[in-house]
Image 1 (cartoon, helix red, strand yellow):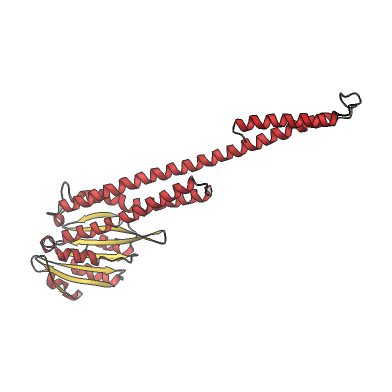
Image 2: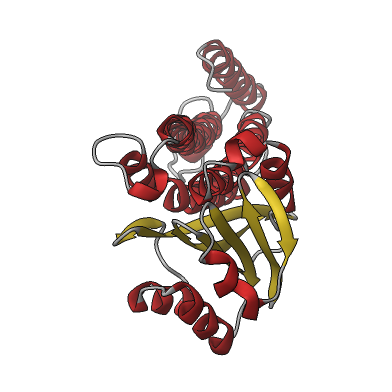
Length: 321
């Protein structure tokens, strides 16, 4: 589905145009066309390939989707795959934006994501002195918007980790804590898959041999690169904290099991003392001491209670009860 098709020249919007008018505008000097597609069919992509002379391999990647984040150079044009990360009901949704960037065009193909980039278009149109730099600046603005959307997701995951840590020390179910931590680790891995490859790819846009379409905008791409460094470092730190939280949770389980084992052993010791005495006097031998005493039975009970009282005091003092 075609969302927008707009022509720009000298940093200002000329007009909303029809797809069959694209060739008339891209031939003008200092003019470029920005086309936005959403979940396009093969016919729409084929038409854009014909209009902009897109590379066949890049079009094939955009047609099939589910690509790893990357930025590839084809002659004087670029093909970029960017992942969008959105949260809904505590779950992470991954979308894809395939972007074709040339000297006189920018084509975005959006799939599996509901959030558009109308704010990016508005931002570019508010800054004609930057939009005058052409499609290279628009590509930066698009990358910057996608990367900035990672920060709220990262903050939400950090808050989720803090909530799980509080439950760990509040005596909540250990099983549910571990399940929550592993789910959180999966979400961090999903975010890492989006931001990690993009860090290396974006580094080629501001240092060394910069692609021609990005010439003059290196400092802007360096800003995106710095954001990606922060995001990746935060992801790695959170993953380490999740691993530590899992270890702490397992340690608490072990301590709880040891505490239970000690209590069982202590109670077994208290039962063992009277059981031993009663077992001795339960043997049917004729000549046993105190069998003929009037106070033999009460005395045996007193001895049992005294020994159990001493054992209970010692075990309680040792922290076993």
